[in-house]
Image (cartoon, rainbow, N blue to C red):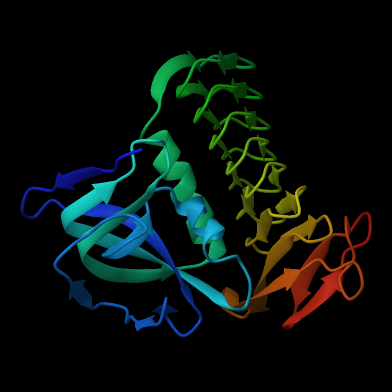
Length: 293
């Protein structure tokens, strides 16, 4: 199938995301944050500077782990895109932006999907429910204990009320739960689930899915060996099946409040780190979390 070549108007950059080796090399070329690079031609999988419009598509080229880093980039000049749904693009000009954590990449995936869906259903009343089943549909439940479900391709579901639940089951779907004890689930390929509220829960079961829990005491789980779970909030925890990766943040309480001291990425190998076991990070060391903790 032929590629589609675009030329962006001057000053209108295209935001994208790029993976690198940990030394910021890609296919032997050395990059540096904040720098801009140019070339003469761009053709996907052939020449030019490459990146992905969908943040989670970076995992297909640079798997999450100690050997990979991810950055937001700006693509400009001549831009080559594939018309088959693949978000990999090539450009004659690239500017390397800020580095993103896995949690940041998940948030970017949520934002990417939310910006491209067509609103189809919304529930504002208490205990309301919203469902969107069409392609790129969106469901939003903002009331107390509301539920939102998006089952179409690239759909998005958002539940912002107390104890709300959001579920996205379609390909590259995104689910976001921002309320107290909210729950978000992404079951489709390359789906992203985000729970930002207090004690929220996020689960990613699809291929290359990502789940992020950034609220206090949140929980994130990766139910597929290619998925990533991020427990980024204070006292957050994460778990995964064998082969999955989890990211844990190390928050420490000080006289002036909680301070972030760092983070660790772990691969659930079934030996050093057990499958289906909750972990948290304490004083820089992974620790199993028992029931009730």
